[in-house]
Amino acid sequence: MQPTGTALDADWLGACRGAVEGLRDVLRTHPGTHQRAVETGDRGEGGDRTLVIDEGAEHAVFAQLDALHAAGHRFTAVSEERGEVVYGDGTDDIRVVIDPIDGSLNAKRLLPHYALSIAVADGPTMADVAFAYVYDFGAGEEWTATRDEGAQLDGQLLDPSLPERRALDGRLELLGIEQADPRHIAAAAELHELSRRLRVIGAIAVTLCQVAAARLDGMVSLLNCRAVDAAAAQLIVREAGGFVSFPRCDEPLAAPLDVAARSPVVAARSADTLAALACVPIV
Image (cartoon, rainbow, N blue to C red; front, side):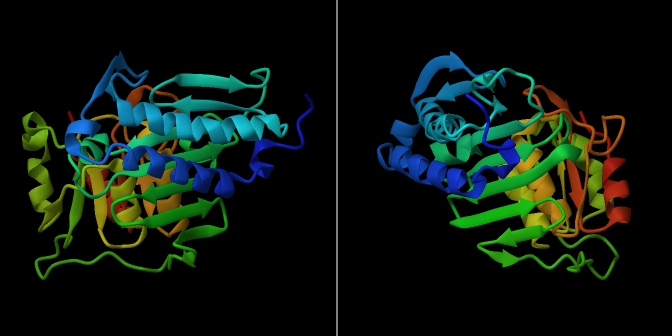
């Protein structure tokens, strides 16, 4: 089948919204925490135990990808559960990076803030992401971004001039942290010098989006994160006037779009704050 153009010409917003509706059906049929805690017995390519709701959510996303491929689009999907799935002959540079449920533990325990995250890139790294979509099921918020066209929350353009806020002593007013394993909280001791208060949401994509809207002044993950967790939301932050870095990579946005956990992610409303946060010792 000949492609009808590049995958970036596809209706990605429509496909993402279709996936949201499919995921809603999965969540409706698993309404209680005891139902959402059921595991399939497998581990995804990212290494985590796969929940039945993870599997159902991924099916909802891949149904949309199947339809786009049937319409003639070629791309490689990178998913937390399935790993890489080639739609075409494998020669196309388009990568679709998917986390069907970012914040699965929140979803399992009926806590707010868990999201569908989808990024579309025309190259192999974070710098190449061209379209981003995050839907937070807890808040019912839709976050989108298109490279060089800005970021939106529920269809309204986010203001890139929004500044960070600081307490009277000069520290950031509010900083988000993710991957807050109790064993590694001590690694964040230096954050006391940088921020007056911390917040843990439990979903990397959602936390990054809070930086995009200047609800948080910055964020740090305390462990290496995977591309599926951050690929979409990091573009949303940057298109909303913020700054993002993957400090263990050679360049700030050089983290590859694969399933391995290669670097923490750091985000801020200013370049100076980003540099300070990137220097925090991370496990």
